[in-house]
Length: 393
Image 1 (tube, rainbow, N blue to C red):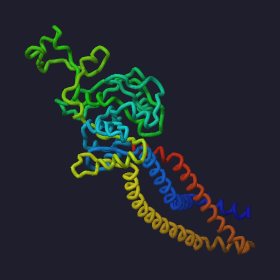
Image 2 (image 1 turned 180 degrees about the vertical axis):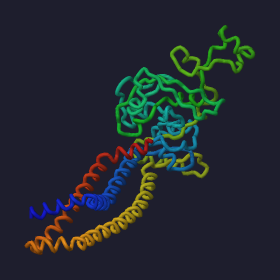
Image 3 (image 1 turned 30 degrees about the vertical axis):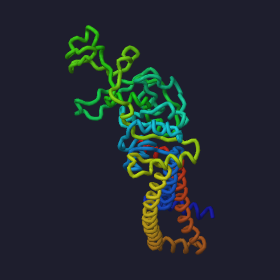
Image 4 (image 1 turned 45 degrees about the horizontal axis):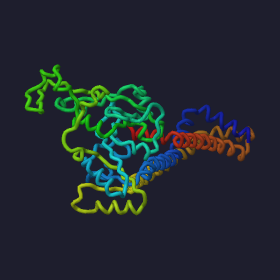
């Protein structure tokens, strides 16, 4: 048996190009269906784990999938906004704890999430260094943000303008980093968290400017009527909130009319959740309430349907490739007829010759299956990281 394996190995080593092609083909035939199944399983786990941990999401009527993806991963297009008064409505119902989210802006391609401190308790996020945000203009960054941007508590991050042509739009806000979150292996690692009011200041609903009553601001005053001062365009607006100018920042209008993209509703029990969902069933209701896990399961059903077609195509191609490999072996036997005849003439039995030929096939199959196993193991170990990178890219 050792002699047969040795001869088989020497033959395959001599015809290394043909052997490499056969091993690569068979490896892919074995790996692709199995690797695809592993990736789909890990994708399903990645998508559903966060959805299962989020009881209910309230948002403006529109695409449920877009709303859920934006709320869970902060990465889809910004959904339709609703009034902040909806947060008060849920809180006053006593049926759930509302956690508002406003995820319209970014800073160097990282989403800025306007939310309250309740969000950190809800997601189980803890501070690795520094502290939670305590005043306007402060932010808490995820572990990946701190690593990518090289920031730490006491540093600063500047929000990105939505458009370079938006000349009348929002001034970029320079935000002070109050703390860095512990690594959580979730989309929160890639986010920048601020208070909702800070997010509204980025949008321009709130602002701070020099004291118009001060003598040095006389050039910026257009007219004075009693206690009302009208400023001209030369008034200096602040793009950083500090302890010195904090008192100058203010909002105009009713805060209840300000926008949020979603509200995570956390009911104390299942009955309260059902009652809350019932309040959003009216046709005249401007908002919708969703169970994220239901929406994600519908998405997964679509993914699994596509997967079945892909696997079928891979199997068909694999069978074709396998048939080609068999044909290569058969043609190889024809080309090796004189070699086989020589082996017979020098005393080789039919069993020995068959053993050598069978050993060649076995060696190719063993190497191919082993490589497929290594690739599958690598997919299992690093697939989730790759999926997360795709989700967050």
